[in-house]
Image (cartoon, rainbow, N blue to C red):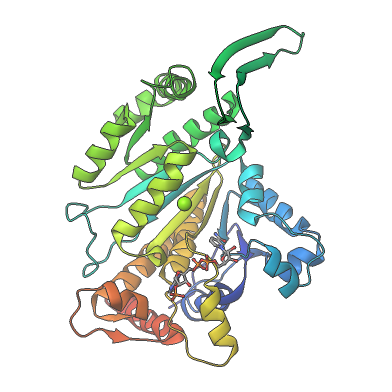
Length: 405
Ligand code: NAP
Ligand code: MG
């Protein structure tokens, strides 16, 4: 087979630990033999972030805005222990946070479904994609521990000095206070990213808040979504036969559980944080969750939802065998290749992305899998493979599919 040509490079963001090892194996075994892979490479491994004072992360995000499609390996978010381990100059911020801020993006997480790994919710036969608003609310809060009696007020001082005040509560004893905010600009970007992704993936979009209780705060989210839908997306949704559906979060939770899946559920920051963990667990395994960051301008950054799988990496360093599941990282590549193909009119590239995904799913459905998958699979006699054997098994399946295609 002649290698598939690419016209525009993918922005490639390399990462850390076990996923960095898998990254190399995936390129060698599953990509380079089939594609004349064109990437603009950014090394987001912690050592290189430290060496460049984290400039490499900023550069990779700007390259994503320029080219439109990126694929990212999991990266370490430094903490105290990592400061020592890597002898860091500073406790660099989370790369995902930096990239998300530059792209002004929204994160969409979806599970990869395979036969034999049955969701805890039996009627979920299609993936549920969670879109989490990633700015503000309780994640940028200001808190006060109230020591004793007194009055709490909410005060807004406008640029011209005029003040608006609201009584929060008159305390007759100790208590607690919290101030949160969001911005119209961020909510608009969130809404646009959600509608754009629904159109892109041809799925219904659900959105839920607690607007009946929060008549200004949550209601503003609801109003902004409705206005953007009506003015920018209604016609497109009707043309594609997809639906925008707003409902109270309580009602959404009940409907989601009873649904068969196959839609995008947009959530405010906290709801999205909690619900994405619930949905990931219910579908089976964090190592089967994909994630894509979508900017309102239409740039895409694909990655696995899991981290660098640190414990496996230390085993690997000791020369011990690991059985780390590479599927979500492979799906980051296939998502990026498919999108690059779409944008460039390169059908062969998109088709390869689809085929490689089928190869991953078929390999697991044929009973070949990594250890953590075997623990949740209904397959009676799974063949448990190590990290490299699993990737080689996927390659074998891929070659079989290519041969019969
Ligand atoms: P993690 O890397 O997702 O791993 C948590 C545990 O989940 C692993 O120890 C492993 O369980 C299991 N697991 C996750 N992915 C797996 C896979 N592909 N195959 C098999 N098992 C898998 O999360 P973490 O240990 O909390 O974080 C490690 C590092 O990743 C941290 O430095 C964190 O900052 C970073 N992180 C990065 C991202 C990102 O770049 N998007 C996201 C999250 C975390 P067992 O060990 O029991 O086998
Ligand atoms: Mg969470």
